[in-house]
Length: 219
Ligand SMILES: Nc1ncnc2c1ncn2[C@@H]1O[C@H](COP(=O)(O)OP(=O)(O)O)[C@@H](O)[C@H]1O
Ligand SMILES: Nc1ccn([C@@H]2O[C@H](COP(=O)(O)OP(=O)(O)O)[C@@H](O)[C@H]2O)c(=O)n1
Ligand SMILES: [Mg+2]
Image (cartoon, rainbow, N blue to C red; front, side):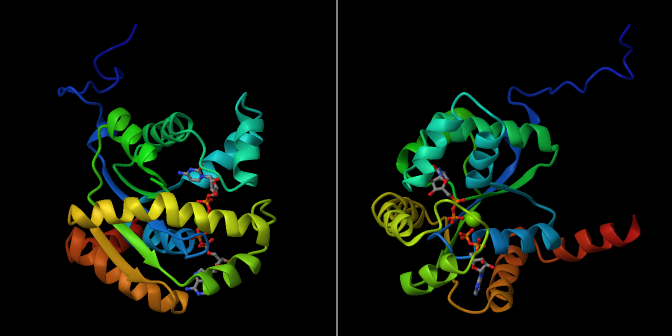
């Protein structure tokens, strides 16, 4: 029989623990360095990195009933229906046990944003935007070498168009709400991270990076 000791911790409030998390959305054109910089933030600030694109690719590999549809949409550079992506993100948040998340490559359009708001009921603390000229994005993607089906010149052009038409309006939306933090991403990766690090230190409290590192050293 379940005793009080091993019973799951009950939440006194209405929303479960994961819905009280801190969320930072990470946006930028394809190839702007979202994944690269998120890995650095995880290391220094203890966030959990959730890439919407990685979750969708994992869903294809898992043999999901939606796999074929997701695969064909990614191959065309189109945005997968938000119900699927939001479900994958919320499940990953629940499973992680962490309470701070970098959500990379999301929201990519207004539908993504609205469905997330309605389902997760979480507003981002702020939105990081990596700004980079298209020629540089194209160069980086063509050199990425991760074997991605959508990293070819024809699909890249389609992804740029989707970025301008669907994602830039989201960037403007968060700018109008005072939530946008824009960082120039055209510099070498280490220099971009200096700006990212300063931003996270000032947004989340000066000592947080140091505290996280101390915790890692002491265990
Ligand atoms: N600041 C940078 N300068 C040059 N190359 C970079 C930089 N940041 C990332 N890259 C490289 O560019 C490619 C795209 O980076 P990635 O982090 O996958 O971007 P995104 O997730 O935004 O598509 C990768 O091969 C990565 O190693
Ligand atoms: N919110 C999202 C994120 C990605 N995707 C799909 O996944 C593809 C790859 O996204 P990604 O974030 O991994 O790509 P990069 O910007 O990292 O190059 C996109 O072009 C979309 O087809 C989506 O439909 N919805
Ligand atoms: Mg990425």
